Length: 354
Image 1: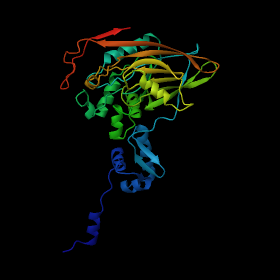
Image 2: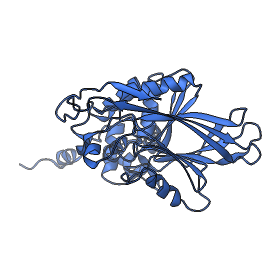
Image 3: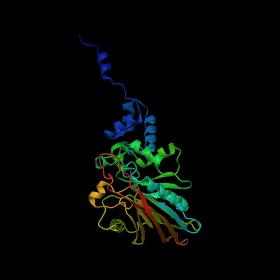
Image 4: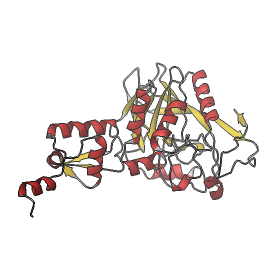
């Protein structure tokens, strides 16, 4: 006997899925949707859908509104906003540089990172610029080299272990690789998510500068004159035959009128200082031992950081001087099972030449 029509209709009607950030993100992963389409799918009002999408974006989800549709993107756009950095009364800027920590790597150097922040504190530094790769991420490329797996576990490790010193704030960009791998896979604005996690744990000393690069306006406290910005950058590509070659090509490739006053470059794990086309160009070093990948490629790691003092002409705003103090760290006994890809790494004794 045939079923009554009303029973067939009831069977054909599927209940609306439960509306959560995860379910909404899952739908958007399958393709762009309008607010109306999402409201119909979840049996919710367009206002509820709109408010949830905005809240998700603010929390770090890479959801983007383009025209009438919302969609998932796997990399955010670099920040358009420039951050303000005001000089000291004597027309100088003094800041620390510590980058490429690769926390959660078996080759991380938390001892070095903490030593650098102790040095910054002793020297009266009030801010540190970090040029990215503050966590190692996890991917097929480093699957034998990480000690902590998963996005949130690595973020929590970073929040728990990244140094905090009285009066010092850290301003960090994030890269396309390592922490950026999570952005590609999970559709997250990793920098915004991590900043929020720091805040949730009572830490106001970490500030997200955005994806890949950020401009920081150098404003003179006495005259208000503004220099071309300080740019913090995490570029891509591999190292070159000469340490200065990659910074040189980056600056040479900048379009006329787009040159910064100062360029801080992460990614290459090198410490260097050059004046290129009137740009004070600094490579930021790293806080990670040479990895098996780097050793295989013949790439050494410059473990350490810097304190930078800029001198500004109050009339023109030009950055007329740049003084650098570097700290480099060394290892002993590399052969002490340090290159094991199957278990924990035997940490070397720390040495430093100031």
